[in-house]
Amino acid sequence: MIQWTGLAVFLMAIFIAVPSFIAAAGRSDLYYTLTAVALLSIASAGVWLTFYIGRINIGQGAFALIGAYVSAILVTKAGMSFWLSLPLAGLFAAGVAVVIGVPILRLRGVYFAMISLVLTQVVTLTALALPVTNGAKGITSIPLPGGVSILGLTLVPDFATLENPRLAFYYAACVLMVLTFGAMYRLVNSRLGHLCRSMQQNEELASSIGVNISYIRVIVFAISSFLGGIGGAMFGSIAQSVYPSSFQVADSVNFMLNCFLGGLGYVFGPMLGTLVLYFGWDLLFELGRFQLLAYSSLLIILMLFLPNGLLSMRLPGKKGTDK
Amino acid sequence: MSHILEVRHVTKKFGGLIANSDISFNVNENEILSVIGPNGAGKSTLFKMISSFLPTTTGEVLFNGERISNLKPHVVARKGVVRTFQETTIFKSMTVRESIIVAQHLRARASLAGYFWGTRTAHEDVDSFGQYADDLIEFLAMTEIANEQASNLPQGNLRALGIAIGLATDPKVLLLDEPFAGMNHDETMKMVNLVRKVRDDRGVTVLLVEHDMPAVMNISDRIVVLNFGEMIAEGVPAEIQNNERVIEAYLGSADDEIGI
Image (cartoon, rainbow over all chains, first blue to last red; front, top):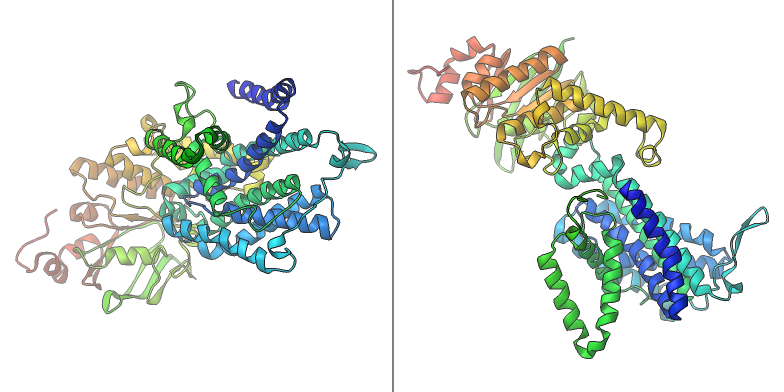
């Protein structure tokens, strides 16, 4: 019961309270920031999922970049609707993840982390080299998402005709984020989630009860990369451009930090982590050249005192409800 | 056709070291067979090869006439040959009941996607998993600890939990890895009765690897003895007890008898 109330409050907050507040305060620049948070949290959710199978994934930037390029190419070169290119971008990223995942997912701990770290760089270099991605110039002036209508009923308006596309992007990103985390919650509490937990806790025992570990790992990595691809594609659409540097190693690291900060034990950890990390960085802007120093020190302190993430300091009595 | 498991000329070499040399024996349906031997005799290696956790160098293991060696462990488990581990190999942060439910993976009829979308088959599965878990918990007399987290359980219960996890997969053959190791007399007797009950009531064939001699003599229908990687004897407990080579292997001379 308390979960449904929480969900209702959360939905009202992001869909009604935040836009009203922004309208009242006249800070429409916040839309961009919050949209970014929502999209980055989707990609972070993917990273969280790979943590769930016991792998440290510092390569989500690669899949975000792949997603952004696939969507951009489909929209600009093939004239496809952005809304169709969005799932295709996710699926393409998932496909790449399957091909890469089969050999590398058998690595554990720091070895997997290192390989995944290199992935982002590999994709960046590939984007620089391929003709279809247009090298360092990237793909620019991507049209805004068009409308979607079924039987004359407009489901999504054409973003180019809206007077406030920022708000539209904000809503679209929030809807995607809610869908993502709803699906994640469901997944973690379904059999796939239980099998992931069994693998994370003891791979040998899991295989002795008949769990095909390598198969589940690949599936989960594909879902994780799907989310990275979706997040990246949406990002490209908002920026209306994609460059090889749109997602870098630092972004991959941030996706991972978002998960750590929010809490690896909680499905909603990456969402909170992304919000705090993104705004935290902006808030420290005042410190000028000490920004990075203060930021890093704070992160170290947080991880030292809250190793299970921010969500671990919730009120007692509510423990484990949204695990 | 009563040989449910056949070990045929199995040899394992690690570089120049021969851990198992040309081992052959059969396991009959519904029997309890123990593989014993002094430390370093190659019991664990053989055990791992039977459960496909290690490949054989030469030779093969058959289950109902079908080869199960040199496969993936989960494939062997799917066929109905399931191993247990010693007590540290558990799902630490799951309760006893949760562990048993997860271990029923092989009984699932709905697909992974079916569980995600919550199809009717998936709901039926979840209900039947819970039901089966409760039955199994009662069968193994673990009702009191059903909702305890595995990492909080004492050693004796962990062993039983390991067997519960193995049984939850609904195996034809259960392979037990040193089920009596480190137990006192009472605990051992309890475990002996439990293993017997598993065989009698569930019709599960049991192959166990062990070096606790009294327990093995008590529980086994037949015994296979290894020494320095070679099989030196096979027979019913009374034969093994009086076998000169076995006595020599354990005591170094034929003067003493094996304590029972």
